[in-house]
Image (cartoon, rainbow over all chains, first blue to last red; front, top):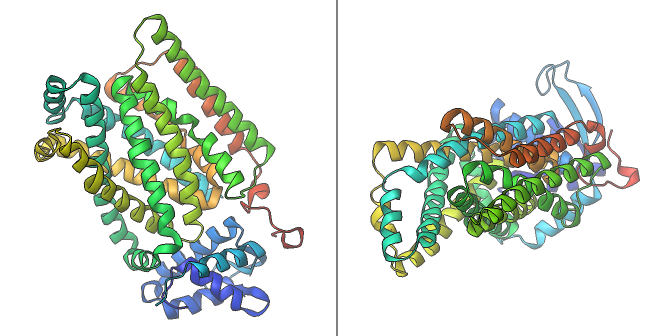
Length: 102
Length: 341
């Protein structure tokens, strides 16, 4: 659901992704299209930081990592493939229960 | 994790500095006149309590001003709006965090500062990570390694030394100041609970957003409930609040708001990356910085039991600090099939 707080939307997008997996740059691209305030490089970094926090919380886990040699995301940075965890899915269910109708 | 540790250490330094204006504000006008006024009509204890409440309310107000500037810089206003719109999702946690952090913890630390001293107030609340850790393990299901648990035990011993030393000295000298020690306990319990409750909300919120909502709620609690109650009880709080526009008083209040606001920004940023137990324990190094800054700027010396306690707290913190990063990559225990890279 668009227009939700970013971490909520990330959980939603990962739950909808094939096998619950997506690279950080893929999912951040989707977010940049949905949120006006995250369209530039700074916004991209804020979104990537949110993913790092979510991985630390155990909601998503890193499956694979590689260096961004082609500059898909930011040249020289680490690209990470994440998958949503069972804790992340439970958290999403809890959040949906408390959702305010739009 | 390195970002989290940097945030927690920055928090400790700035929080330590906060005790300098936090100590100075007690000797500024119009607060001194307000204390004398209330002491004449009520009692010295009542004067101290009302002053602690008013300073805490002003502290929160100046923090919101600081955070407003901060949020312009980090461009989080739209995310604040999105988070507030979904009230049920997270804001209940921030309201509870505001209630525990402001009226309980910060008032407590100001009471401890006023009745015992800023050094005691800073060191007494070093014990709060114990409460935060227990709650993070039982309620948030965050995992705990043996080394981190050992570190927390050492911090607890340090806290006991701080309390026991001061209490024994006061009792033997017949100069016990129970309200100061109660204030210290309020800080421990309030901040301990705040960390865990806020971390629950931070799981699904941006830290700058969470912090701003938490302080807006605290300001509302102060100016819509507590301060009006004080006015209804006949305390001249409003009269003296309108007299804070003296340049020196405004400067000290601004520094108070800036230092505390920034320490909270880094504190809340550390929680999602380090967990409540480790984030709070590293942040609690502020006790050391407070003792150093108070000595440098105010010339306030400290007793040996307090210094021993602070040293134990710092040792415990370093025991946690040296835990292997790989063991705490994820704060929660994942299924065995789900282990991270």
